[in-house]
Image (cartoon, rainbow, N blue to C red; front, top):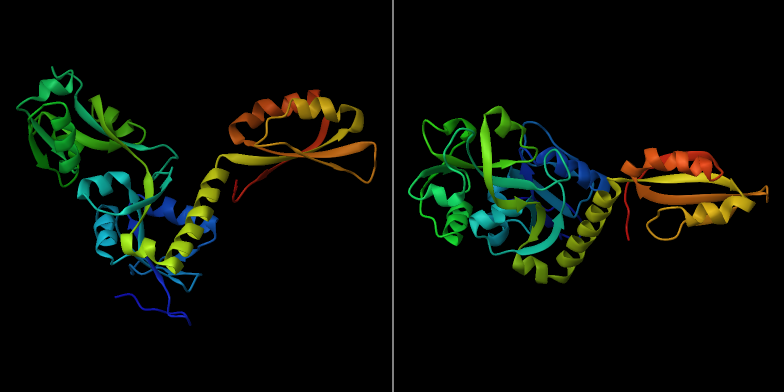
Length: 298
């Protein structure tokens, strides 16, 4: 059991994913304002909020423990929620994975030289995977029956000598290519979810705490791909500049001490900056400053 360590005795118990999702999860929680400290020899991280108690545990197990009420909330992939058939509240879809902000795909793959071209060609064949239930449901939806076996890992190396096909997780596809595998279908696109125990979600104090965490996490993720830009512009050029600015809403425009100039500030997608700054210069912007963002709360 996790100890309560605050004066009110109220605590939100959270399951954090140990393994591939761990670093990304702790990174975004820290940006959200909840800094967890992990000791390599302990599964009980400390956090700078005495109303939160945490355990690190494999993402595959979190949904089941949330359903049972051992955790009030957990962060895990929707793939494991579906695989374990957990009956939980899906509070928020958080678009991040272990290495990118893209979904993880569970894909059906075969060797490059396999005669298999579609899922229908796997009728009666053998498939290895960590997600037996997901694979079974996927095949059933296509009217295909196959022998599905659980894989304890290193699934990519099992074709063609041990199985005819695999269902495996990929973010970039690099591991599949390295093992000369060809994707023939996508079983599920999975993103990280914050899930809650149904009883915990009905508790007013816990629900407010959960909603606060979600709000700040979403703000941290929204800030991940955006930056702020500040610039000065001569008063006679400000209208033309503002008309050509991309921004989340309207840009902020304010007066400088020298009333011949105005200050303009915007939030933009970071990937647009390399094209945007030269355009701003042509429109009369000067003293341009780019700065990172920690949170963006709509």
